[in-house]
Length: 164
Image 1 (cartoon, rainbow, N blue to C red):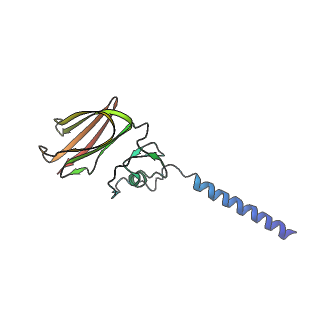
Image 2: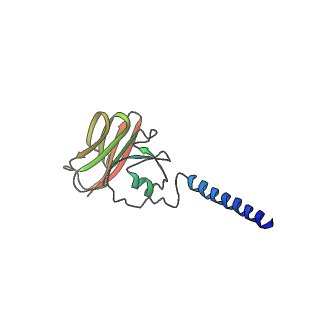
């Protein structure tokens, strides 16, 4: 009788332990602080924006997982709260300046490039965009630090890059 009761208690204890392990795996935090590495360089240059579980838009899954430390991607595309995502890749420009831009929905944008003195080097309005890759000739740009401003309605993004 005692052996049967002990066997039953051990079975219940084992099931509880198994349940706790399963729940712990499914209840992962959105961001794993131990995986956040802002200095990690993803070798994947693709521009496929993803919305992480932290409601932050990342350039691609590699950047989300390695730099942001997110455990889950909500969906492919720009997070609704970001409205617009823009990046220049690579940030050290030797040839043409490549700007990647994607909206959560459709939008218009003013794109400006300014040098470190605030002088406008490039300025152009674009209407009705969803996603686009811009290639801007490097001609006329001296080596140095530049800022790309992407302005759409009341949302603006600033991207710093270097021409070498």
